[in-house]
Amino acid sequence: AVKDELGLTVSIGVSFNKVLAKLGSDLKKPDATTVISLDNYKTKVWTLPVQDMIFIGKQMQTRLNRMGIFNLGQLAKASTEALIKNFGVVGERIQKCARGEDIEPVRNCDVQREIKSVSHGITTLRDMETFKDAHQVIEFLSDMVATRLRRYGFFGNIIHLDIRRNNLTHESRQCHVAPTNNHDDIFKTA
Image (cartoon, rainbow, N blue to C red; front, top):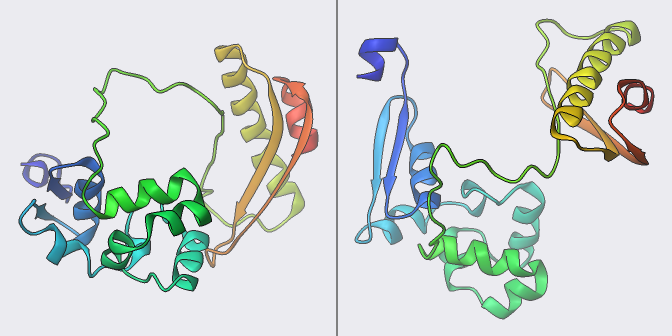
């Protein structure tokens, strides 16, 4: 229906918990539906590399691999104590997800999360080749962040700038500042 009405392809994951549904939506692209059930999740999920699961980025993947954990089945069967020792409560959480034991409820679309940070990003239409180009983008982003901070009645004390290059490598820097929601403070620091 989405394809017919809007001309868009979608990938859908259907499962008994939201982490596995998300994983299922990533398995077949584009325009597919993947069902991960209680009966088939071990055969469909446990052979996948650990980095295929949400919450597991490059650094965690490297640390898991050093522990001899390369796929989600190995993660599910690993020592819970070792995972907690290496990753804290996150270790136990990712193991429960690999075991299909994630019980966190799906939030209704009208329930907002508690706002803990304010950020704004943009993908420019063309490559930024000069400092002047970057200067304009950073000024725009600083204004967006400052406006939202004031709207929420917040002050930020960490300024973080992340730059992604056209070859998909990225670099980031951050620093602490006195609490602010002022555009000029954010812009000058960035």
